[in-house]
Length: 395
Image (cartoon, rainbow, N blue to C red; front, side):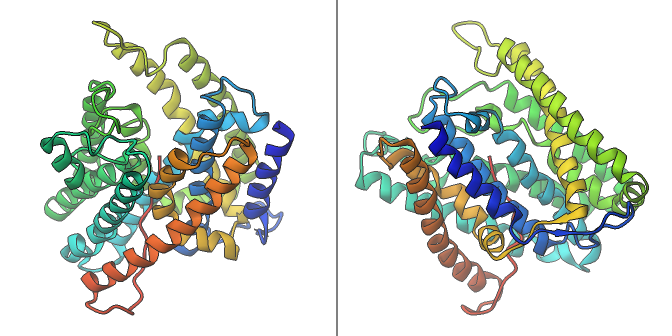
């Protein structure tokens, strides 16, 4: 079976490298548009597939208890791929703020509609499918109070929706700081303090063991373990020119150093996670220090992974029709694929991957079409006017 699963890995690789464009061997030669939205969206589309692969592998291997071959490593990689989306969110937000006059004046109508509408559309789709199958999240058995919390999103019926909650909070913090303070030298440190506080708050919440969906806000390491990538993205947008100038002079040094550094940091982070971990609370033991040590070991690996990916993107432009399509539906793909993780009952591991892969993409395309029409109506008042969907996602 591991050999058959490798076909899935080969397919992912071919989707990524098909049509890749090399900027040239000269050290200073880079793609000037390497991080523009049109290119970044394709990379995000690939990250959405990798996040889905991460969740599929966790389920199929019973969290690495069963060896599936090389693909088993994806059990531990979800945080890396999520970090890419948070990085691009922070980057895109600050870049728009600096380059689009009056950007924050229409911020709520334009930005929040792009996350709130997919949140409720995908939640409704998940609820309907769940009720038509086995009610795995216990909606029918829940009391009235919990039903209301599920329907409003105060408790997440689909716990993959955590990303929307987090990104909305970061958007709001960004808006308040840059709308009313308007001084980078103060807004940036305050944003860092806010992220540090949100991280600490979530870490002390432990895990949700009271609701069937495990959807209580801020309970779980996925709520906080890559928040800093949003801030790193903001910093990259602010200092992009000097960073690029440095990379053009040292590319053939920093690229291999970044790759090697990430590998070492990732191995170290997994060693620390194995010794301590996020899920150590039991009885009166909170496990806060275990979580903190695991977090401190994992964060550097995530930051180096994302920055090294960006450096690679300078030389290699990953762009093709498949990635462009996946980039457009990446938010819906992430939010909806849990439906198939739960309800796709296929005993054959390869077919489980394949069926979840195809089903998730099909449903995501349908949900994206619905979301886009509703967003267009809110932003432009017209059903057929194209709206730039530059929302970044993941877990």
